[in-house]
Length: 140
Image (tube, rainbow, N blue to C red; front, side, top):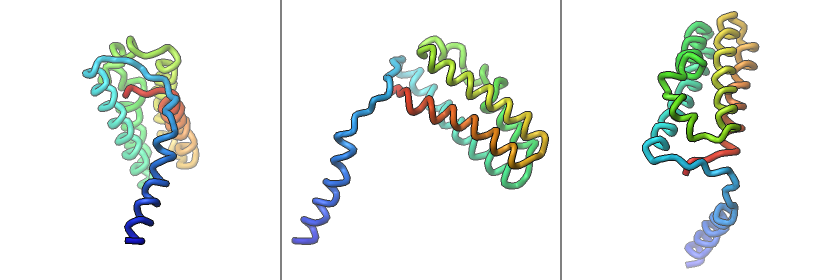
């Protein structure tokens, strides 16, 4: 009985901070279909970053550049439906997204140079854009 009570109290003590921490990110209202589209884009962005990291690990700079440009960079905007998604985003959120896409295209150019350290530094600009946006906004 004592073990069950201890376990319950421990579980409760871990849950209370999560329950009391309000999500202060700005809620961006959009239709459910657009929410699903945006979430699918974000998952694809995360998968692309994972593929980029794998390519950099193998020193396949051309593959890293290709993934960055066509899945994250400025060349990816049409395939992600950026123009209709941008209509429902607050201006600062749009700017963060544009910054991320530009940083990904810059990363692609840097990766093509074949310097792994510079490539990692350039990739950080991409992920910093993601972190900044996700810390400021939510759609659910």
